Amino acid sequence: MSEKVTLDELVSLCKRRGFVFQASDIYGGLAGFWDYGPLGIEIVQNIKNLWWRAVVREQENIYGLDSAIIQNPKLWEASGHVAGFTDPLVDCKNCGARIRADHLADTDSTDIDELTKLLQDKVCPSCGKKTLTAPRKYNMMMKTWVGPVEDDSAVAYLRPETAGPMFTNFDNVRETMRAKLPFGIAQIGKAFRNEISPRDFIFRVRELEQMEMQYFINPADQQTAYEQWRKFAWNFLTERLGIAEQSIKWHEHGADERAHYAKAAHDIYFDFPHGSKELWGTHNRTDFDLSNHIKASGKDLQYFDEATKERFTPYVIESSVGVGRMFLAVLTNAYHKESINGEERIVLKLHANLAPYKLAVSPLLKNKPELIHRAKEIYDEFKKVFGNVIWDDNGNIGKRYRRQDEIGTPYCVTIDFQTLDDGTVTLRDRDTTQQERASVSEIISKLQNNS
Image (cartoon, rainbow, N blue to C red; front, side, top):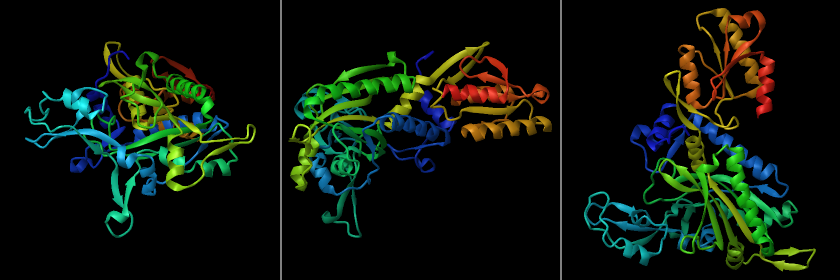
């Protein structure tokens, strides 16, 4: 990045250019909920498509799943979420503010005793008074009711993660796909967490989308599989998304950070505008999930290895990343502020596979019918091949270039009077601003080779 982008600049860009809007904007919004606009959803879809291709379609032993958001609550009891899916909370007795205790203490620890010591001299960040309660645990599961009666017998939960149903479907997938270890189950879907204090734009939200893969293995292979999926995460970010290596680093979870189910956990941290924060997690969940579901359901979810005649409960290596956080990382990585011929421009140098549009097509002048007619024909030709092509004739050509730079369009095609003579058009490169003349067929070939 030419200059580190601020979170305010990204929020402004997202609203101005149709990437992300505040949910229920006309009613003042709702904390922790966001809507992806016309251009934002294109990037999101591109991210998900790249992940799905790399995880499911290019692997021989990973199978997809799309599970229900609401599951039998016994699933979440067995997984430990009903009892243990908590964050530490403090209240202000003066102004009523509720704050994440670990955030206020500036620590990754969620140990109540440790937090009590760290917060004993802290004041409320809202009112400035030393009137905070002792830290306590707060369950982030979002409750709902199934059926017409809202009582305890009808309580259900919006899933807090997509992983749970992948474990309960382990045997269904193994049997229907005739899968042998090692094999994985992958899912992209919504999860819901009743965050105490959602913040930092789309980084910490109450409704999120996850891309998760659970890889079932023989316990003897846990170290090899763990390193395999750590390497996959790093390479996906740097090679598929074009994330700069200097913007990411590994963070190994200490014993006080790891989830209750994890034997080992590593996060890839990314340099977001608001600091270096977790982006992608790789976790060794051991046999925690399947063992608990065996106990709670009475179903036999063990695996029988025909080659060794061994029966065991598989271990699980989890690879998990949030779509919103990846979207935010992609925008941060791509955002550049530059000076071109003495004029400042904002440009999103998005990887070609991530950009909302493959290219923009413009007539040099919009008051010349012959240019408009030929430009429309060329636009239609590109549209048939690539689909995500935009028509842009608003303002002069310079303003169009700046607009397309700001939304990350890799190429702009301009139809001028020479096009009417020899069929060539002007092709402008977003990153270099260099222009060349080429035929439509040459451009199609070039863009297809760059995909």
